[in-house]
Length: 207
Image (cartoon, rainbow, N blue to C red):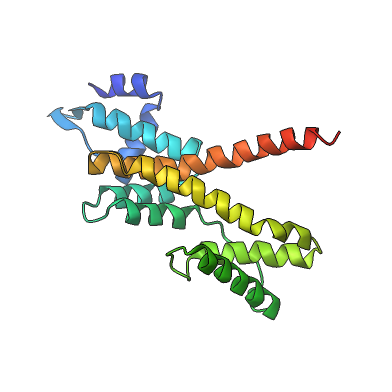
């Protein structure tokens, strides 16, 4: 297809497509003449993936480029690509991590992980993120919320097992890697939104 058809079918404006081409997010088409090229279904699919990561997943261009770079590396498989996506989804924090209370919160998170029998790196930034939340909840005197930690972990484990199981059934690497990206980034958007909807439902019972 010509670039005009790519614009029409993807809904992505021509200047944006040219920008993605310059930045290496979208591979070049097959040259057919001066300043002309043909694009295939893989270009349309890549464009839709880029837009989903940006519009729904909330990733910036730099983060999208890093995720796609990892996905295009044949030496990396689903586990490594998922790690890249997790890293890029990790929000920066302003928490003070020097206090003994924070260290105690982190120790509690690591104990939770040990209790669950999870095989993860203890230095994952998400471990610190959970510790940030535990520390903040305790500082606010909302300790009863921390009784839900095991429930959070159990729910997360059940969902993760189901998600990874679906992805690993893909017969080819390309399909597996794309499912890892969409499941990680877009699945998080679904989970957050559904949790808030469910909270509204649960709250309505107390009116």
